[in-house]
Amino acid sequence: MKNTAFGCPGSNVKTVEKKNTENTATGKVSSELRQWPTQLHLVPPSAPWLQDADLLIAADCTPFAYGDFHRDFIKGKVLVNACPKLDDTSPYLEKLTQILKQNNIKSVTATIMEVPCCRGLAMMVKQAVDASGKDIPFEVAVIGVDGERRS
Image 1: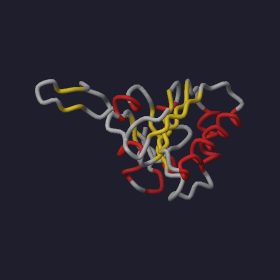
Image 2 (image 1 turned 90 degrees about the vertical axis):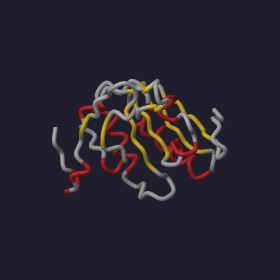
Image 3 (image 1 turned 180 degrees about the vertical axis):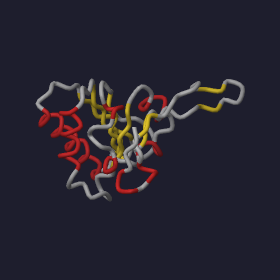
């Protein structure tokens, strides 16, 4: 599928083919990312990889703070990321609601930092789940600034 969002070839919707997840000889762990783009502003609600997905909505800082983010959160999920403090979040609630309404989303997990500005992302995701009218399991994982999972 080719969808040049905003005229940028880097925003084309595509599925990322996975090979092996770990090179045991070198200890290198492969990325668990399954699709592109990930930034919520660029993800169309009709992206094919959203259908029948476990959706992970990550605050932008969480993958940097939590060392095992790929293994513990992204693996087996579709990732969408956003920053509730620095992004223009005005269209986020509607976009998330449309993603949930238009697709058979099996579960939603939001990863946020323990800092106050991240709480808004979790609240927005919860509002979108409620507005979708669907009974979708929803979980929030809070990551501390020290990189430890709080919940």
